[in-house]
Length: 98
Image: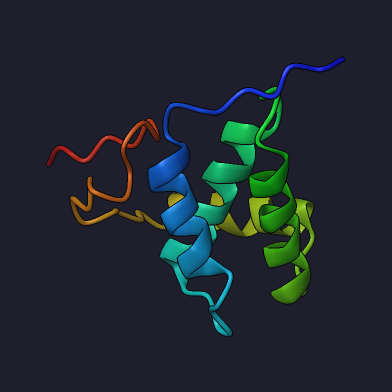
């Protein structure tokens, strides 16, 4: 039987997922958020509901995971900056220093 683990950032990540799932037209920051959350939970044991929501977002936005990562690489290569929005980026690995 697989242990169902809860990620330490579950609550803050769930808020982000809930905000993304209702977006019709995601902006660059939304794409970055989705990509980083997919990567965070990719090999995490547990969080099945959150992982399912991430898949639903991909489907709703009509984008594949491969296409999402391709787009976010382009966004980052064009000097994307999260504008010091560290409240949304806790534990993400983003460098928000100027």
